[in-house]
Every structure is written in C-alpha cells, then in structure tokens.
Amino acid sequence: MNMTHLIDIANDSGGTLYLMLVLLTLALTVIIERSRYLSNMLEAGDQLIRLLKSSDKGAHTKLADFFHQYPKLPHRHLVDAATQALPVIRSDRESMDNTLEEAVMHEVPKLDRSLWLLDTVITLAPLLGLFGTILGMFNAFSVLGSGQDVAAEVTAGIAEALLATASGLVVAMIGLVFFNSLNARIRRVVHQMETLKIMMLNRADSTIQGHLQSL
Image 1 (tube, one colour):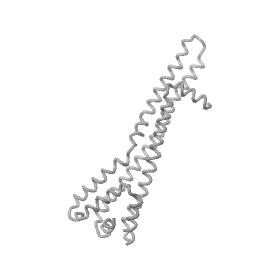
Image 2 (cartoon, helix red, strand yellow):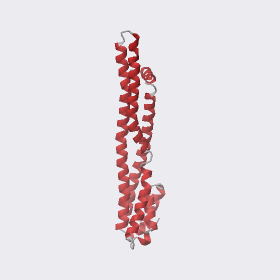
Image 3 (cartoon, one colour):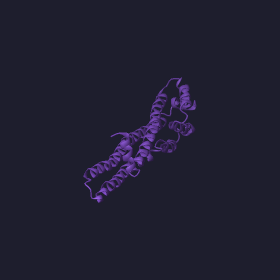
Image 4 (cartoon, helix red, strand yellow):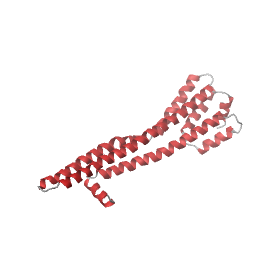
C-alpha cells in the first residue's frame, strides 16, 4: 500500500480520514505541550520542597534564586499566600488553612488547561471513524447496481471503509493513554502543593518563616 493508494482511500472516505489526521495532530500537540509543562512543574516542585525542608542558612538565597528561575511556578502562589498570612500562622490555623487551600484551587485549572481538547479527541475519533466506515460501505455497495461481477471491488471497498474505523480507534487509544498519564501528573503536582500547604501549617517555625520572609 503506497502513498498514492492511501491518498486515494482518503479521498474516497468523504474527508473523514483527513479530519482524523487533524484530530491526531491536535492530540499530539496537546500531549507534547502538557507533558513538557507538567514534567517541568513536577521537577521544580520536588526541588522547592527540598529547599523548604533544608535548614541551611544558604537555603534562603537558593529559594529566592529558585523563584527567579521559575516565576510562573504554580507553587509560587501558594508560597506567596503563606508569606502574606505569616502574622496569623500561629494564632489562626483554620484561617491560614483556608487561605492556602484557596491558593491551591486557583492553580488547578492552569494545570489541566487544554486537556478538554484531548478528551474531545478521544470521544470524537471513534465516532468519526464509524461515520467514515458507513460512507465507505455506501460507496462499496453502490457498484452492485451496475449488474457486473464486482465482488472483488465490493470486498476491497469494505476493507477500505474499515480503515476509517481502525484509524479512529488508533487515535482514541493514543489519546487515552496520554490523557490518563497527564491526569496522573496533574494529581502529583496538586499533591506537591498540598504537601507544601501542610508543611507550612505544621512547621510554622523559624526555619519556614525565615525561608518565606527572605522572598
């Protein structure tokens, strides 16, 4: 099956295979962008937790340099909220907890941005493949009215029609694997922020306060 034959099949599919290619491109774009973003966030989050756990005097400077390197890190807004709430960190734990939880909730939508596109591709691709198969079956059986011995043409037409369904399933399976993987990474980033929140609530001592006040 050469490229010319594939193009002919795509042309006979009523455009569904071209749409399938668009869906695959969209899915891969979201997968690559979110994978890189979330991987960077996870690595930076682990580094931040290590810095806050550190009791070295030089950790204050390292923390400032860290946030200069990662100015858009979601964890930064959580730390900023804790910094602003330092005066009440001992006297009103519940208020501090609510403030930090609000900061976490504000950052979650930024983590799963564009994932709805991948979710849509996973749902739409098999349906589009089924639609392409139906169109292909119509084309395959349309030759029966000619009155000729066209069994071979019908068989070939059915095989080409099923290619649309196969393409839709492949796109959906690729999207589903990475969709679940990206959701797992999002949960890990949220867990990091929850860990930071608990650290700043339970370890509101001079070490943590010194780190935050140095920013």
